[in-house]
Image (cartoon, rainbow, N blue to C red; front, side, top):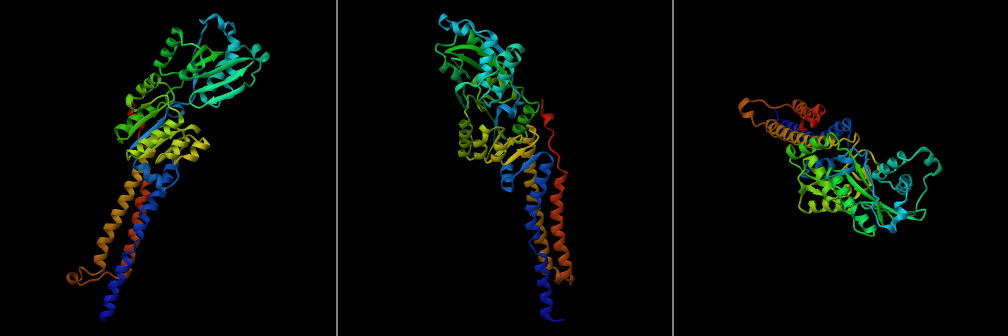
Length: 403
């Protein structure tokens, strides 16, 4: 019956029902549930800040080897060059097995996956007797130039294996028509062509193929068409090989960067960021680490330690389609966060006036503090349940975008 008590009850009801718990729970619950859902699908997300950046991605840069391709390169073409001037008779007179042995010795010290393919090819094509009598040795003066090739000295032979530009620097003369024709044929098929230069003359042209992953094409199509994301391809291959690969992936030529060094990936990330875009970088190797660290969202394919350390997301299964799932999940989580905030805000905007007695003059009833407490708890519970609904998330069916 006291006016003070009457007013105090309204005040208590307002304080109880206006508790900001629902607003405080809106983000952390959604992030916690969402990152857990990502983990169950093989997508490891390092934090909420990276998750928010992933939901806003506008441009994405893909490394080629081991990312869009299977990362299992094999030698598909091996052409021995015998048409050379007399001054190179020492090289010309090498037997096929002697040349293969030289190449295997040189490439065995390189960590590049293409080098492994060359070594495997050489070893497989040497006879068992020759391999036993001539075990592989380490070259002297070995030098590996990232994005170019390797060189070294083996039994008085000065040998190198590398791309077209690097091999042209190592060779004494211009490439012959036979060499040019071999290069063009391999590159037109999307193969990586490397040349073996021995004592200043090209001794062999080697074509290395790395099959494109089954989910690469539909994933790129999904990102471009469904998510409106700008997709770039960065590769160390020359422009002809890069164009062939881009065609297989459905990418316009203007979105392909060929003959790229590891620094080129970093520069491309910076240039897109300078345009005000939110940029993601997808890679799998140590060469991608600087670009992964620079990008707004670094996405590591597979679990290579250095790349995973530099990245913001790690795709454990190593599938390109998981890039699409990661972006879709990030956008779904932040849509849920917005819905949580909207619900909590509307709930309080409606509950506070009722608790304050806005309808009391009409209905002659007030909201008891105990009922306000229940209503406050229900607002928090409803936000938590909304976040838990993320557990029903299903990744997009990427392979349905194959055609």
